[in-house]
Image (cartoon, rainbow, N blue to C red; front, side, top):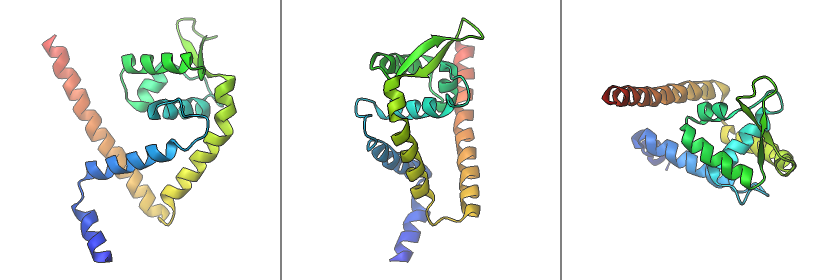
Length: 163
């Protein structure tokens, strides 16, 4: 049985493995009480906003960079989150051209369950895996991310030349 599993792991395409892991994480994320009206990406963005606003201001550009999604996509997501009462856009005290993303009271009420969910999920993800293997895994995954980001940068350069 273990040999079959080892062979399956060896033969599985990286993209399929990452996609499957992502689906499992999305399913786990839907278990957070009070977030039923949010899409999976909205949940991830709300978690990011709740975590990061504890120590700094968060702006739309931060969301674009962190999740590597286009400005127009982020704009639509944030507008819906604002409409549903999870965030507010507040003028920056440092630069009036920018609006800070601030969690509402509704979102703040979810902070304890979201923080607990993150802790439990991280604990479950790494259970039984030695730290050395986790370090290798992180390193490899960041390199894969960079490889794909490089392809996206090349595509943008081609598009700009065609304009």
